[in-house]
Image (cartoon, rainbow, N blue to C red; front, top):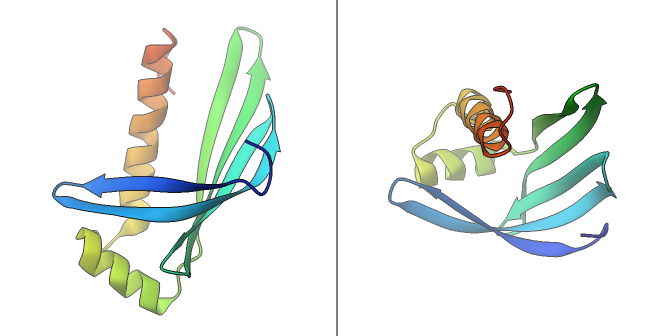
Length: 109
């Protein structure tokens, strides 16, 4: 996806489901991909994926930058049931990277 592309993010946590608006802000094939997330016009986060070539393959780094203001933090907690978003995202990011490594037949991330 080129920089500027807008896509819809589909999210869920248990019975909670919601969509977000995402805009690609960085797209360098084989190097990095990043997008900004908004919900009802409010800033939520930036997600960044960096690819690091190593001798036996590629290491994928996933980063999350919290861009929520107080209102969005409150809405997010009420809407998803997650009060500690940083800890939650750190855990789910590791799950994502482990699943990617398993799918590709590599060691855990």
